[in-house]
Amino acid sequence: MEKEERVNSLKRYVFYELLAETGRVMALVRYSPEVVIGRRGFVGEERKSGLTLAFNDRMKFIWDDYGITATLTFGSSPQKCFIPAGSIAAVYSPEMRVQLFAAVGEKGPDKSHTPPDTFNVEESGNISGKGCGNVINVDFINRKRVDNDETGGEDA
Image (cartoon, rainbow, N blue to C red; front, side):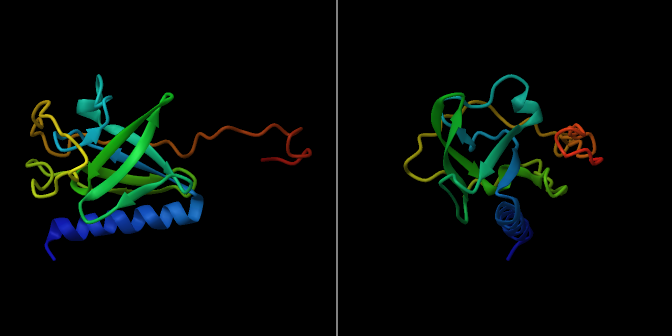
C-alpha cells in the first residue's frame, strides 16, 4: 500500500472512530477540481482556506476507497457532494479535542480517484500549488461557560 493510500485509510479510520464516540465529526476539505459540493461549490475565500463540513451519525453518507459521497444541506438546500479522500486535509472533533491534519500534496489528489458516475464534474479552476500553507486554528479552550444557576450552584 502506498503512502497516500495509508494516510487516506488513517483519515477514514479516525473519522469513523470520532463519529462513533461523539456522534459528530468535522472535515476540512481543500479546494480541488475533483471536489463536488453540489451547485454551491467553493465560494469566496474557501478556495484558499478550504471548507469545513460537519458530519453526524444521523446522516447518510458513504466513505469508500475514493472518498466521501453524501447529500449535504447548505441553508435549506440539499446538495449532492463528493469529496475525494486526498482532498480531506483534516479530521477533527471539538468535543474530544482530537485533530488529525494531513498534508495535501502540491500535485493535489490522485486523479484516479474521480467521483462516481452519478456526478457531473465541471472544471472550475486549478489548484494554487502552494502545498500545505492552509492550516485552520481550532480553539478548544474558549468554550461557553455555564452559569452557576444552570448547574445548581456548582462551579463549571
